Amino acid sequence: TQLLEQSPQFLSIQEGENLTVYCNSSSVFSSLQWYRQEPGEGPVLLVTVVTGGEVKKLKRLTFQFGDARKDSSLHITAAQTGDTGLYLCAGSNFGNEKLTFGTGTRLTIIP
Amino acid sequence: GAVVSQHPSWVICKSGTSVKIECRSLDFQATTMFWYRQFPKQSLMLMATSNEGSKATYEQGVEKDKFLINHASLTLSTLTVTSAHPEDSSFYICSASIGWDTQYFGPGTRLTVL
Image (cartoon, rainbow over all chains, first blue to last red; front, side, top):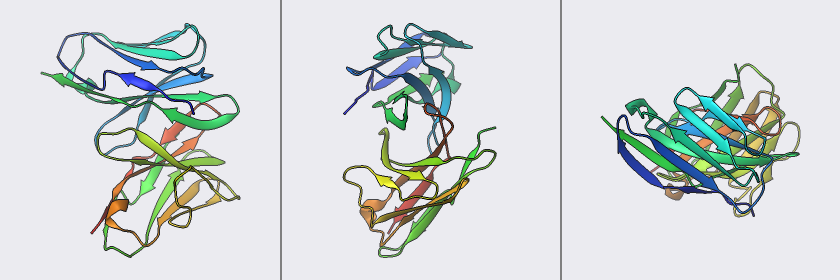
């Protein structure tokens, strides 16, 4: 069974600070996705990374896929209150449409 | 594009009754849809994979007779919680896949069983 552990589980920081969320596994994934979920809503896809070492930027968010495709990170620069939410990583393997979700990181940005 | 809807968004029912939740892909066709359950402050737990025109595949520990899934068309999958009990109260989320590595999620349905 493939597992994805996210750290930290909870993070509360001041607006304007930077932060990094990690997603780690002992298994290799063909691709990895990051989602953000707000209370009472479904997850919204932020990015998909597929190549080992790949870095993608989405405004103030930077996503990196590990060289060995076992881990990923999400870095947020100058956090804003609108970044508050549950961040979920999810891995998938070619030929299998199932997603393995990470344990989640609940981020709170304090104004 | 890639919008998935769920109906209802919330439902309250009495113990022992059945509840049907619909999941629709609005602007694309999806041969595969997924049903997840999410407990408060936790991640998503996959319940079953729904394939159009065939029987659903359930994850270990999920009762297929309790959670009936029907995927009658390329844009609609339904989840029926039969003889619901308070422990079935949860947030149920569906998704529709586009390719092997991308799923788009519905807004979720909050079920409360009294």
